[in-house]
Length: 314
Image (cartoon, rainbow, N blue to C red; front, side, top):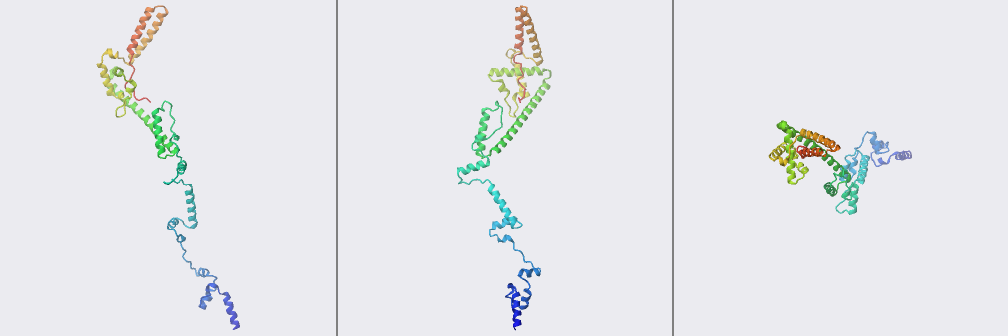
C-alpha cells in the first residue's frame, strides 16, 4: 500500500491542474501528457475560430469605420491620420462665433480685412478713368462681401481682363473686316465714281455735323444694333453721298478725289516756291497774286479729309 501510495502521490504530482477535476482515470492519464488545453488542441490539429476584433468595439459608428481596416494596427493608423487632418483643417465658425474667431477664420482663408486690399491688373494712366476706378471699387466690395480670398479674386479678375482683351481685339478685327467689305461693295457699284462719291459723303457728313453743333468724332462712333459703326455701313455712305449731291455747291464747297487733292498739293508747293522767288527780287505784286492762288487752292481742299468708312480704331 505504501508503494501504491507513493505511486499515487507521484501521479498526482505529474497531473496538470487543468485536468485535475476529470473523473475518468483513463482520460485524465492521457490528457495529463499535455501542459495546457492549447497544447492538446494543437496536437490534435484543432484551431478554434478567431473572434473578429471589430466585435470588441462598442460604438456602432466605430465598427463601421473599422470595416475598411484589415487589422487593429491599420485601424489605429487611420484614426491617427484622421486626427492630424482635423487638427490642420480650417473650421468655419458657428453662428455663436465671436468677431475675433470670424476674423481669424477669414485671415486663414486669405480674405482681406478691407475691399481696398484686392488687386487689379495695371492699366496705362489714360485708361484708368473715373469709370474704371468706380467699377473696380464696386467689384472689390462684391468680392469682399462674398468672402473671396485675395489670391482667388486676383486670378478671377486676371482671367476676366484677359477675356475682355481678347474680345476687344476680336471686335476690332471684325469691324475692320466689315468696313473693308462694305468699302469693296461701294467700289463695285460706283466703279469710276467711287472716289468722288465717297468724298461727297465725307463732306456732307462733316457739314451736317458742323451745322448741328455735334462733334464729328462722336458721330463716327455711333453704332448700330449689331455693334457696327454706322458710317462703316455702305448704305449709310450712299445716303450721305445722295445728301451731299442735293446740297448746293456753295454749302459744301468743291468735291475732290484723292488724286485731285494730290495734284492741288503739288500746285500749292509750286506757287509757294514762285512767291518766294518773287519776294526775293522785290516783285511784291506777283508774290501777292501767287499767294492768293495758293489760298484759293487751299480753300478748295478744305474739308476733304476722309470721315466715313474708317473702321474701329485699335
